[in-house]
Length: 361
Image 1 (cartoon, rainbow, N blue to C red):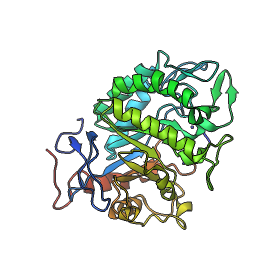
Image 2: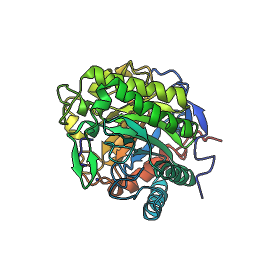
Image 3: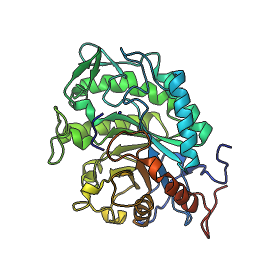
Image 4: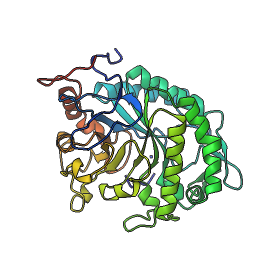
């Protein structure tokens, strides 16, 4: 979304580590990635969840000159644990969570903008987040970066916000990011079964010099962003068993990512897109080579009820739906307002309680 930046479920109810097979309507082949996926009542895989998307934008993982308030800090740890317990009660199985955002906390960079690695907080924060996710039986889509990387740099009380567009366009600088930060990160967590996928970047089109994009001060070319995505996807595939995805801001822009080697496509939907990219559109019509989820849809100021979004997305053969959002403070976020409907839909579809349901053992 374009923003101005804020009993563990039993084996009968949660899917085991599975290969993705034959999603109806998406013409997909099974990607060589494994993770937890729910079985819908007709045997299709369906990722049902919510965008968390952060406790504190871009510093849930790592410290800053402001101090450390990441997930392993006691206050944040208690908040996240309480939040995940609540989300599990509402029938949430997947949480999409932003890691590094605009780069304000992590990775660390030298004076020339080259990545040097992580501070002492990043791994404890991520260890804590994964422990909480495991405790509550929730799988994670971890969003590495955000289009705000390419914002005009701004120093706020000793912390640089944005100003990292060179990572997107400079191959040498990107190499330091991959070697010093992403390879160690993926080596450490690349087989963790609580991580469903690594998302390279949220809504990259916002940082691209395209019609409808250019939401930032330093947009980059299509080729530059595609190169950034492709290099990181290759890194994910080389150092993990999880999927690689990109959070495309709109279905109309999915073509930019067809040759990026993704295991899971993702597009976002808001009602303002309806005339150009209506929600009620079959996934099969996209002719994608892998499954596609709707990674964001609104829960406030929305034209449909929660159940109507979910029904429409599932009926059209998409591989999942993630509500925006639980903790966001923007004009499209009010998961709590539709939580009862979400829970009822989850119980009726994903948990196998509908007539004729297939249960996973």
